[in-house]
Image (cartoon, rainbow, N blue to C red; front, side):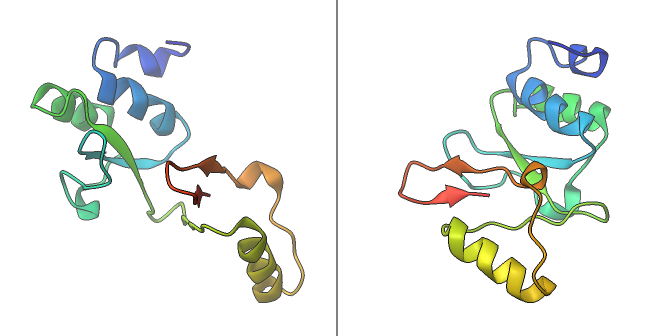
Length: 114
């Protein structure tokens, strides 16, 4: 663990993974391991580390972490990076998405998560 905030999560894999996102101000929910199926609904999203610890201790110890849109963050996902960027330029009147605002990960299928 690299930060004081992340130390609260040691020994609880779900909470350890969530800590990184909580540090950045994102809202999270637990997701079934090796799945995209949520355990709780997005309406129960939280940025509260006490809630994350409770979820981790109450049976979601090894859950994946779902990132949720909230009043501070909008999330966009696309399987076509070039098409996504082109559509954003079109909708914004030609503005480029700064590289620091885009996270891209190759998925197990042939798609990308952005």
